[in-house]
Length: 287
Image (tube, rainbow, N blue to C red; front, side, top):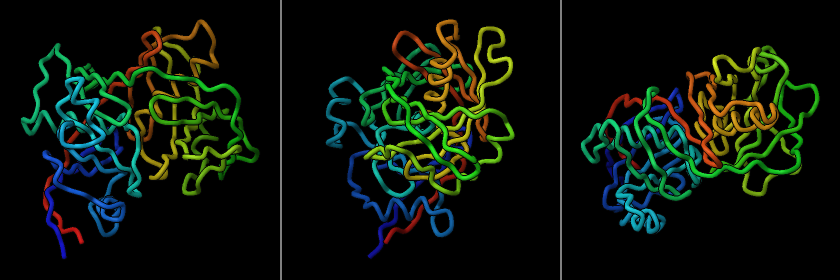
């Protein structure tokens, strides 16, 4: 038996998603069905799936509905597993809501979007949209990271921005470009729920006109290497700021293979900004 569903393909700096409208929570997509949608050979293809559902229609959205967030972003990784948040995905999610008329966002207004990391506040920005990812946490202690292309293991810094990250500093652009991220990085100790791993090279000079600059590549939990990772970009900027010390700026630009994203730190909150695009829409039959 097959079910035909509607979808839209979208991306934020090359981090791409299958958007599935399920406004009243009628769909119950299995792990295998989500993985099939995201499959780049026999499906639509994407780094993850964004299910568009009213907060009141999904159990995970109870707190979001109470906070006034009409819409909940049910985010799934490309392998079908559930994830807490996605920084690029939430911008694409909001862009879809606005383009389809499901929500409005005035030029200087704001909107709440429900996620498994709580309702998050979003506004427009010069780069597209900005999301307040909430409070961040820099973990104590190092994690040892081994990756194909690195001759020796490197220390990584754990950063939590609503989902887990480990950030590794490399010495040069050549070292960053030489990584083979078709293989999963090995972490010691291994995080029990997995993690995203960012490899970064600070620019030289690090700060220009009060803004820090970083290059990054990422291996995303449940997806592999992607062209961009919004929460990973935020974690990378936070880690480099931590290493740089007290004089480091609160404003950053992070270059990823898919483009450039902005990061701001305001108190103990981190805010991410960048573009979002919709590519095409259609229907697909799911077994």
